Length: 333
Image (cartoon, rainbow, N blue to C red; front, side, top):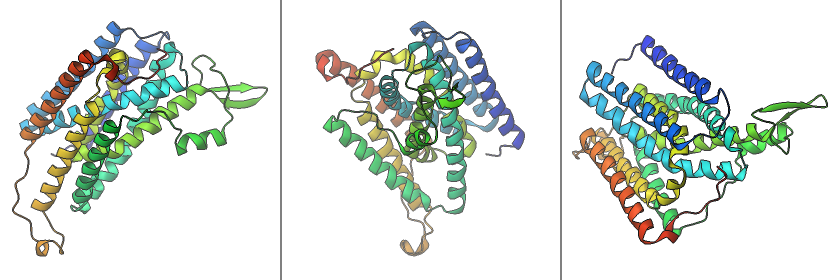
């Protein structure tokens, strides 16, 4: 897929314009986002992603469009699981309801910038060392197994501050209370950061950890950096409104982690098969490719959609029969 520089620039500018419009319209006056408002924005961002995918189909063909949609759906579904962690963060820091949208917007914008760096690094690695797919595949299989195991053990989730947050706290004094939507404030001539800034860093840095499995996963579906970046961008842009739309439904998706573990494991196997099919490691089969089957994008897309559908239906049926099966987390929004 040959993507000229102007297309990259136009795409990034277009995404920034969408974010700016969102920021101006929704955050012009801080308020608690309603379900109806969130639903309209979710539909809008999904429609934008679908139109973008159809544009790829028209200009570059069905294969690349299929790769974009598979990547977008995978990233969006992985992001839904991340929303539960965001809910825990919002609850832990007691973020006022009227400011939660801004926190998510800035936090996810930081995440998009950091993911862009990850994607560039991943693309450079893949172009130079095709054997990196062995590592990506093994990592995804391990991550899927770990995710399924954690869900099985039903451990209570709580937010623990990461290294980045601890460093911020060491460098900047933090006020005990929120000061409206301000991230920085001066008290007696001394600059402080507010809990609002800390939460934004928490959202952005936590998402970066999530990217450790989502980026290898999408590279397992497409090797095109442009498709990897845009699929991530559209998934992240619609994530904020999905947070407000799903609300209590998040706790009902009790089998989501299992579904995602299956998807990660499937993509991991797909990556390893492709690595074997194009093998160049001298200590494996004398540096010659293995004659193994590979998994096409049509099969990948079908498996991803199928697993997510089964997972969602099974979760809702489980909670309907056993209300106590829901995940429990305090919410202040």
